[in-house]
Amino acid sequence: MRQNALIVMIAVFGAGAVLLGAWGAHGLRGVLDAHSLGVWQTAVRFQFWHVLALVAALLLPSTSRARRVALWAFAVGIVLFCGSLYALAMGAPTAIGFVTPIGGLVFVVGWIALAVAVGRRRRD
Image (cartoon, rainbow, N blue to C red; front, side):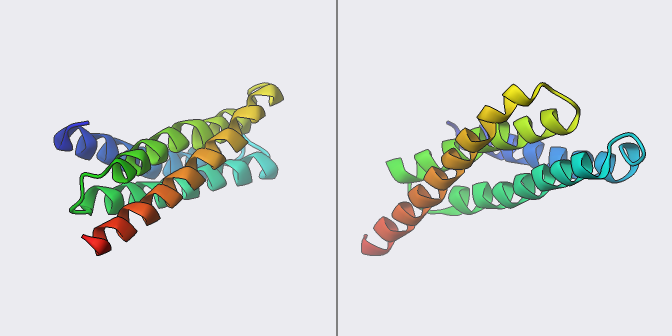
């Protein structure tokens, strides 16, 4: 993926986290029950953290395969993990919950790939 496209994707994910967090805090209060708001907040929190992980991966001076895997895994993880939590909080069928742990595993792959990318960079 081209650098500019990555930056745009990260910016969209970051702006989305801010907007979704604000909507959850203000627009969904009184609409969702406490449990659903908690699920929403978890999704926002994970989205923010993984936007930062995307920035860290992007800033690596390496173009290694591990770096590319980390970038893709964090982006896919945001869509799967956070997206499924947003959907569940809004009342989607509970069957969508099978996507959440898949997204979580993809996040783990991203973190491992980031560690490998950093480790390889240090050896170069």
